[in-house]
Image 1: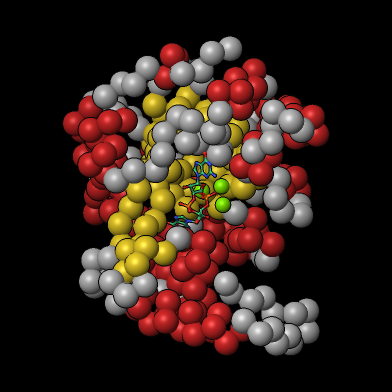
Image 2: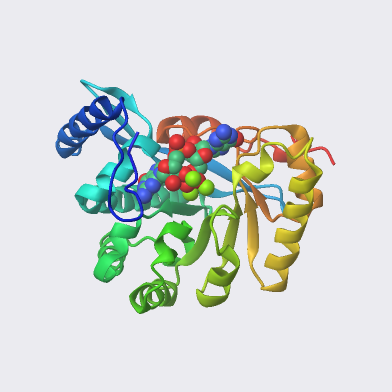
Amino acid sequence: QVKDEGRNGYCFYTPDMNSDMSDRIEIEHQLRGALERNELSLNYQPIYCLHNKKLMGVEVLLRWNNGVLGSIPPDKFIPIAEQTGLIIPIGEWIIRQACLQGLAWNKDCGENYRIALNVSPRQFRNGHIVQVLLRVLDETGFDPSLLVIEITEGLLIRNDKNTAQTLSRIKAMGITLSMDDFGTGYSSLSYLKQFPFDIIKIDQSFVRELADDPGDQQLVTAAVAMAKGLGLKVIAEGVETDFQASYLTSAGCDALQGYFLGYPVTAEEFMAKVIPPKEFKALVTI
Ligand code: C2E
Ligand code: MG
Ligand code: MG
Ligand code: MG
């Protein structure tokens, strides 16, 4: 668990802070050699289009299995990778790996599956991400119009001119921009106005209790209406039940992602189990 600093930079001492600190130091220490030791891998979670009921693409999710610490969830090590700058080499590895995988799948299947990548704020510093994307797309030949970059509000909070410029440059390359975890931040709406997004991903916290919470139902309906008004596509994430899938479909979402439709899996499992058309129509009953 990473402690946030207080407003004025002070950190309050808590009894578990020492163990938190040593956890952190150990994670950082192990993470430094993770790429070289081949401990990082990618999982792929299917995203299904609700218009044609077909596989639309995947979200790429980073996995880390360390010899000492075991398997560590991204929420625990990505913030550390971000703070230490290790996300820079790791991030480039992810982008290259994912593009190569997407290229292979699309060639094998004769399809145009989209590859969605999560990118951290640190990768945006000084426009670094633009250089990486240009380099990887050039090296691999992956079609930029099939690449989606997912960004959370954390990046936009700084709201400087550079961020806007970097997003525009990415967009100008033909890459799609998606706002991840939509609705969880303070000013998702004003960011949609300021930055050139194409997609919003409704956060799983609005999906989880959809069956029992009329407030969440209203929020989802409103978010879809708003997105449509702005010409944006809507993906709902964290879809775990038949009810949620049906509700989100009727509400007008464009695509769904979640355990109900498919777990994040390795490239091999994805190729073996997900790509052979699993009729999605049969799953969602409206
Ligand atoms: P995210 O981008 O919002 O990714 C969605 C998370 O929800 C993933 O967690 C995924 O495994 C999980 N998920 C998918 N379907 C369901 C569902 O039906 N129910 C529930 N409860 N969860 C579901 P994961 O893989 O642990 O990743 C957590 C976060 O870590 C991601 O949130 C993303 O912010 C970050 N992350 C993951 N991979 C990368 C990466 O390659 N680069 C960067 N910068 N961040 C990453
Ligand atoms: Mg994401
Ligand atoms: Mg998300
Ligand atoms: Mg998230």
